[in-house]
Length: 377
Image (cartoon, rainbow, N blue to C red; front, side, top):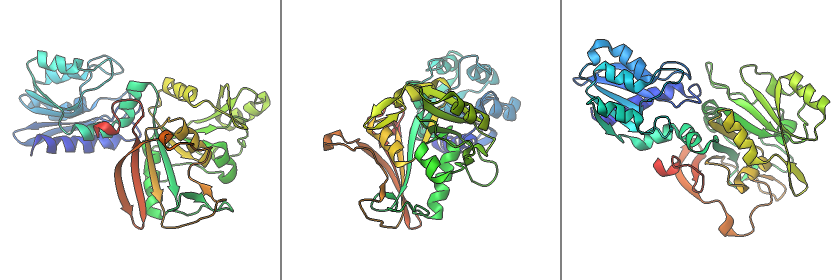
């Protein structure tokens, strides 16, 4: 097996922590000696042992003289756990193969320097694109201070998300909907607008089999209209945050808090006839709370707000094999729209996939902040 083969195995291990490692990155590690894997490990959860430690513990004394493969540069600082670079040096491995450098200022090459100073041969950049893609949430968060933002949309071929009478179940097929559930599992939090809550009263849970990670729920509700008996409060395995304006009555906020919500208050800004939560201030607050990823689930106006402001990194679109038609049918992206094509958001199409008779398109905002987005995939 080649270095790339072993790194791909390490990536597979790292992905086992999807939804659980945040705000830390997902990291996988192998210890290989004489062509045999003698130790494997991954970072299970923030605060627990890192991937290198788990792999080296499994390898034991046999790690001496071996090669260690790790998807992300070993840390060089004391946090909730000791520095992994030091543990790697103590293990006696003779070579370390690293997927990508960690841009965290506390690491950022310091781990590699520790290894080299100890006389260990270091190779960097094996399967770098895949390693960046795996941790695009963490890497963007570290460099921008705000979460990686994914917009998810399910529409008909002509871009509608509901008929003129409001029917929307189901525009996409079961395979597309299951894929969308996996998106929920992989994000720290999921965001919807008050329109979605009032129209559909959704539970907004990840319904995959087993016990998947349940993302926190964030509702943009400047007027505090969320009903206290909404189904989003039924799941107790997550946090519900409702973002309101300054003018919401104290009694209304207290009722929502009694239902299980945390209320975040913002000075709203006027967009036409609507008072809106300022997106930049909102994202800064999420960053302070160590949310590394946010999934925008809708509706049409909320998606428009993030697209028109350019505040998104990735958009995943599921296209059903239907045509709805009609100027009164609800479009996937609402809002005012742009006046000039030069103001449209430019996208980089990363992949197109058939899900039965539905289509899944993944694209990146080419103007989003942070170096570890589509450019490094």
